[in-house]
Length: 367
Image: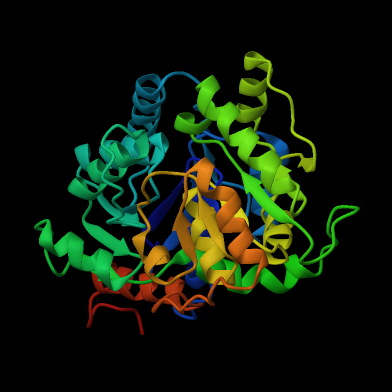
């Protein structure tokens, strides 16, 4: 019987990252492990989570823990308990966790406390803001992981500087880009929402607590978006958290903004790939925009993805500077992005190669 490798999907953004590995494992002619998709439950809505599975060509999770809701500590603790109960009876050879959400940290902690090896997909990201929950999670997961898959060479070098063993660290590239490149033709075959024309709109996404959980911050961003929308209409897939906060704060949607529901993977990729620019506080959108060479205006004071800044695809902007940055894009002065090494369609294959070294060392593979 082949050893199992459990791929942990906690939140929707984990799925495109894991999809690259899943499909690379599925393409193996001589399998050395059996991948098992495990859903902790952190994101669980049928329309979005399961729609993402279909868009990405992933099967329904073989294991669903159903852990959702509660504070950071409650969600982390209950997920740890559920993982431990599962793995005491069904022990995988290795657990793969992706990104930096609470379910990722919980699964990594539970696995290591049981002596199960952990691979961190998207290891080494740092923004320097230790008050950000995601920054706490990603640092903690890196500290206990056995395999650290970095999205670029500079991030891998940072992990080595932090003291991780060279054999544990591997610059594999960005798995989000692997998935994007493979799914882009299907995304571009989809129609845009009525009234939107390719190149005739910008995209806005906002969901970070620092931006939407404080009335003054959110009001400032809405005012900036209204000013931008006078120059070019904005399409805004409105996050449920942001919608709730706007209602609580009594804030109105500005004119010139096309509000969309939360979108599935292919629909959002279709929207983003044909936009003039994107203004966002999302880490994943920064990566996707860089892969598509779409100007990205990141509404945060820092980013854990500095390689996107170095490529020229991404800039950090304040709400007050947003209009000027958009004017630069619309004037044609925004330069083309430089390609980022390893951000290609071979990321899944590189992760599989590292897994083979660990789980099926030379001389022990089946003929």
